Image (cartoon, one colour):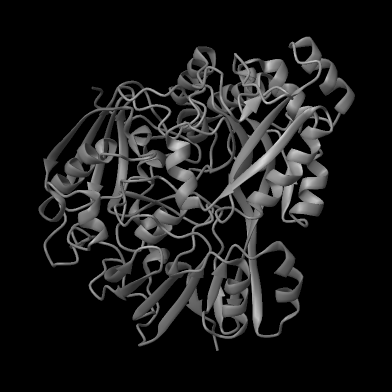
Length: 533
């Protein structure tokens, strides 16, 4: 270990508490209820169970992280007031002394150690948080409010990674399972709200934490309702039954923009939508057959020529303009322009159905084949409609495609078991940079190394893994971004997944309120304030 701390420049350098002191100035506490209607229900209150948007949005009301990410995905102090890189592989975090758990007990470094032990090892997790802790070789509490983290290699993105891992209380959650969080027994956090009630699939009631270290929120109560039906969600906002909704149906955007009682809040999303073949299926699957209905003996999607042919058959402009009604942009990668690692040279695959047919013939499918695209019908904007549109495009090149649309709650377990050979998928890189996707989605699934935690399709490419590892270990921001752009270009060339569109996310907000839209799409009460008078 060196005596002098390493100076890290760029967007992920050391950040002190004073840098965001303004963020901690709370609005005056008033006895008001905020009513939120969200399109996708959370599946658990266990903040370590499933790394998906609805769960993360709900649980971040209750739990804090060492590092928080603001609405533009930039790291900010939270339970850690500051952090310093003491050497290339040693970080020191100074923890808050004024944070307490909802039951009044003090927050300490021991709670962080417990959280780091539990997060990668939650039973039956369909996609957890281990990837964000994969580089930590050892964590030690120097004292109750000083934490030192030893990394396996230089890892400049450690503070960014820690922005995804909720800190839970050892005294409340030791020995607790996911069911204990859902029942409220273990749901004791340090967050701005405490749990009042949770009705799985229906709603949650959040009550203001008046002792919150960041100052009391303006809402004494938040009614957080799950409204998966698009029409019902819009109707609830227009009727005044809720104050804010997310996932505005694209068909309702123009109507809400004209309504004098509503404002539309929107931002370029970090979420990309793509089609994911399942690589763990060898063949002989009833959803991938020849035109006579006989299962194919081999998995056609393992052949990059087939994947490229399918990509060339997609008219992405039509998806963005007609299906998404302007609320998306065609893409060939997974981050919006301007994000760290975005490669401006990588463009969407050009539409070329004749070349697609030739590639299929070269791959041994001159007549094409049949397949079924599996999709949720209530998770992402127009998810089933996008699948139907792609199915029609693929049918035109001889790949006769049908669609199996499922409620998200039924889709997730089948996706986790890799039962569905071609799936509509989406991922929001909440860290705002390229490594998150490369490790979690495109990285080889390896429980021991905590990589590929959300790779439900079991794609594996050692070369891409090695490119990701080199970039992740590069301390210089410019050098790391150059390596990431190379990885993005290689990904686009090999095409493990077929990128479709990058979303624009919108919320409908009742007049009299202000809303800060988040690039990670999370709908949170902390971003809603009474409008100045």
